[in-house]
Image (cartoon, rainbow, N blue to C red; front, side, top):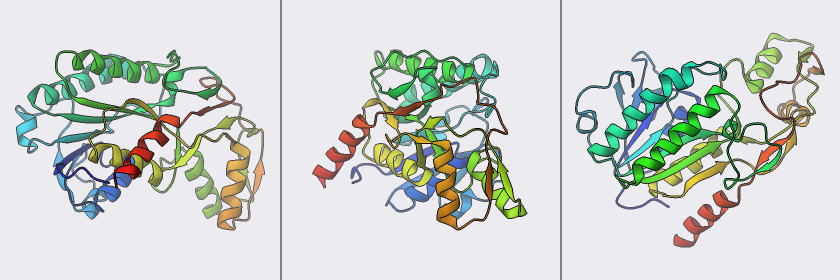
Length: 290
């Protein structure tokens, strides 16, 4: 369901992996979309019929809110410095730049905001992770994301606006970065490799296809949701080995797994997944209104 009053949606990070799928989902709704991209040469974004605007968030023009047509909702996906989660860039440069940009739009009149967060905000906690848990990020990326969320919460005390913090778990799908598990597997199959090098695959994770993630984000944006932190996840733990084996079977690929080739990452626990109760309540509420 879409709130009838929603007419203009701004998407930052529109040229990225998630952004492209969000634009695709938005194209199915009767709304005008402005796609903010860093690289003016990005040709993928043009396929979705959005108005494309190019500038760097670090140096936005004066009166940027008015120049963008005074959007009612912002889907904020932009974040630099990835996939290096340990880089100090996340809180030394990215965090202050992000807050400056977002707070400027809010003070100028933006009334509704959906921001992509990360499961890395939970830190090294294991098991099922719920939004009410204490946050203890253990890398600069997770720390900076959580700090931005807290800054926006403080801002709401003096400048009210609707805020949904979409805390993303693991995603997969077309257009993902080359260093991702899904893309590496596809490339390996495409090369005709006889085996695929990976870790032991025993770690439990929470994976969701990017098209589902985009659908949930767009639903929250168009309904101007104000639900705070919400896990965007499947809610179902799966071993990485089982996940990869499922991809191979589903696509009919002929490749064997070389398990244990890589060591397990030390910046995340061996077993964690999301509690999606809050997400399901939101989805049920939307269904009841239809």
